[in-house]
Image: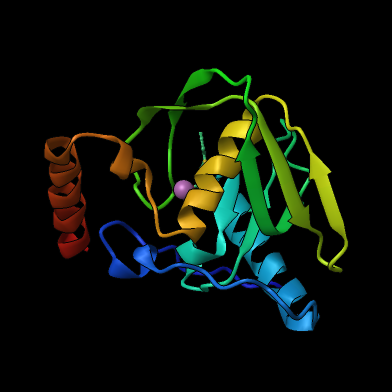
Length: 169
Ligand code: GNR
Ligand code: NI
């Protein structure tokens, strides 16, 4: 049975670790993906990177469907920005930075590569929300967070607020 995992909250230093490439496509990978999907659905998120549950491997889960019944798993995802891209602004949220939304600009045309849970390779030029969300998730695997795109002043305010909330609990 899948179990709910604890999501790390900024400024937890473990969110800064760089994740390792997945080499073994075994039962423990499937089991981590199942736990992450349950954790993501429980938190009402549209995506979750393994880094956020303190597992430092290159694994991302996502569900962009309205009915929340289209789970997707990306193993070792990577992307290249296409030459004819524009920047696209989108208001992003992050389960590791609860209560703060930020408008972030990202390239709107990428070529995405990943492996599925069995290790088979895929590539796609994604459309819409997937383009934004997969860049957000791959940032997590690199130890990068949404707050790294805002001013240091704003980042420090968010850090203080979340540290205070955390101490209150
Ligand atoms: O649930 C989430 N919503 C979201 C909205 C806009 C852009 C990215 C995201 S991902 C986020 C879940 C999360 O923190 N994933 O790392
Ligand atoms: Ni996030």
